[in-house]
Image 1 (cartoon, rainbow, N blue to C red):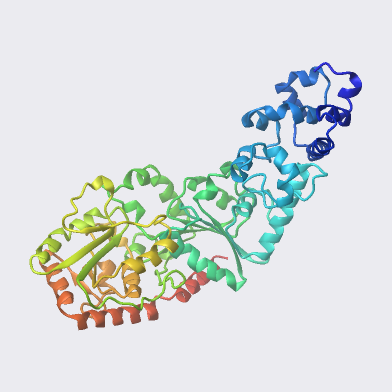
Image 2 (cartoon, one colour; image 1 turned 135 degrees about the vertical axis):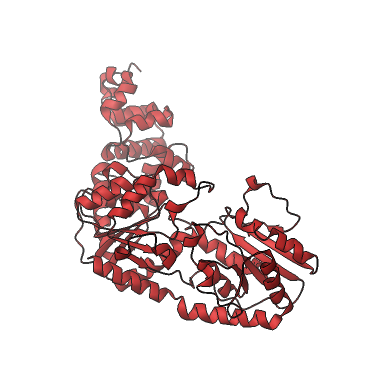
Length: 512
């Protein structure tokens, strides 16, 4: 690369030479050069540290990159290209070989993102990208917080929680944190947080910032909440940074709500969750002790906490996800069914002998959705396993699918009698009522406080009782019809989202 001084110091002449006087190439490389230079994509000192020949030749780093740096692997390029431009992200998302060239020639005009948080913050190729990006981010952040009362976009959530100063707002700002990903929400955060807060946001009194595990992995946790960005923080169940979050809330006078639908501290040693919960037990306890309010699902669960700051907010029928089922099974071969997450083998084994006993006198199928883990190594001769759908932990996927496949005459809801299960809610009863399936439930507080035996369901104790109760339903279609009707009427009348929203509204108002 021993060029005359005039060529080295004249980018246009150098481009013309390298392009062999091709007008098309000259035009393209002139654009690339000027745009890279204007955007200030390349850190000069870092570039010459990699390409010392550029320094020796006293050559413009932007010009040198056009023909030599561009051949570096992406990791090397990223060492001198601004961190704002995530080369690996861009290459993967847009399936291109050369992210920088593609962006300045084409991607910018298509509003391509330069990183996962980019929300079209760059609006010209004529000025430095750093200034544009952060000015654009700041402007959009202010507009989003002003105009949107329910914020789920990570491109807003993450920059917001790392602000050094709050954005002025006339609304009550609620930061909501769940240990599940907020995309493809699982049932617990969907029902307990998303449903009520999404509706409450329409009151125009609040702005909700909805954080999930998919946000935490992208955050600089040490730099979150450095000022009073929220008026109230709601934490569901458990987080990997409970202590830090609590300390920041206390420092800036942010009210704290602990929300749970389970007695996590009461998880038994034989539970798959015990080891993890036990590791963070002190953090959970400390958070609960210092919370300004606690919300739970049932009176039994409420009894585990300080009554002076605990509010019972029942579960409800989520009518935005699945409709009241109309095509109820009334003929064909008898079918019993069970559904639950993959941690309920103990519950299911409570009724194994029941099923085997019934099969001696009745011709029926017993379908099981979930319930067992593969590690359980359970013989399937007494039940038929139903294959779960893809993305089955997503509530909006699972419940409509369940409504289609659960064509059962009777649903069985066994529950092991344990301290942990005493804190469970009647959610299964609510869902079965809407699905139009009469249920037989374990006679435990979670169900015997809502199920009236023979009216909106049946309650069973031991094996003999389970057999008798199931036989009652199998042999009496009119009883099944009455239970369906009564359970549905009960749920539609007493388990509405409106009541839940009002309770949250009252709680937030008292805290402020």
